[in-house]
Image (cartoon, rainbow, N blue to C red; front, side, top):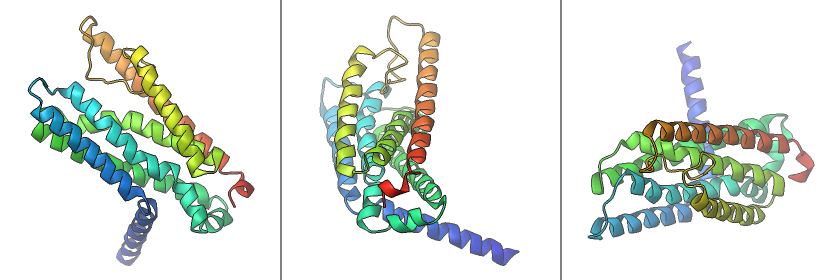
Length: 238
């Protein structure tokens, strides 16, 4: 029994390690470096600007763009990298194996991105202002997960990483521009839960934020299911 347990743990460890190598290979390091430089650059500006008064609200805005950069590459280029490495035939050759592969990979991507956001949040807590670090990272996950699964869905639809990247940049810009008009709306993809309007009751704002998070979560599930459904069309990938 103990031997079986050890073999199972070893198998899970190897699966996670091998998939991490695949997911975060190639150009991911560039996105990681850019994400960190953007984060540090803006944080230093906020830190040394005499007119700046960092709050939870500003920290959320500081961290959301680096989070989107982190999620972009592995979700957009994941399938393309398998095609280039000629792994796609193996993945699609075993019935239902592709679903397990990409679900595990997405799970690993989100875990790693969450840990990095947790690290960024901790640095912000130490350098800028006090706030609930874990809650900040969790709040950031909602828009990051939604955009990540949207990237995955379009990558299975377009079947070309660069085409997917172009579409997602356009969609991301559209969401970002619309957030100015929907700043206090539950439909705002980038709603900042810490930015409580001065003329709004806190209970009402809490309800708006909760509805927004529910919609983002449901959208994430729907995009994920759509992406997995599109993976059924084997001949379009192999």
